[in-house]
Length: 125
Image (cartoon, rainbow, N blue to C red; front, side, top):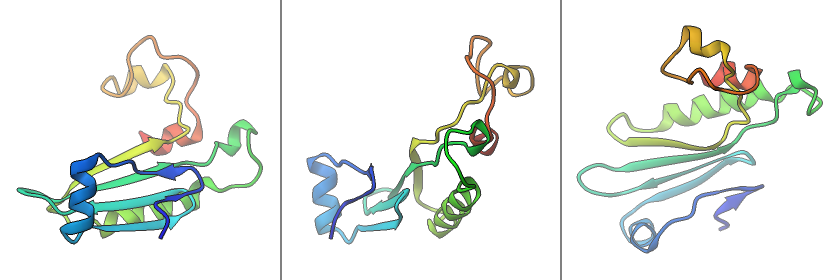
């Protein structure tokens, strides 16, 4: 079984690899843009979801609307994670949140952000 999918991968250190191999941990390639690993550990299990979001079609950097299915798949994956797990979502969201977010969501980005918000940024925020 491969441990990556189309550029999405999770790299584990020696201790995490041992936990993954020996303690009933699981790995799943949800699709070519989302992979998930659940590490059995104490006192709490850790689930890591690694993602590579499609480029925002609104910016005409990629043809076709693939953003919404990606976020639907991501939400379904998040919903499968047990509530008692520590959940980490890591990767490239291809998101820009922009300066205008500073006025409405100051906890998201500071006043010196670059670019303007894109569709992926709206999904992320």
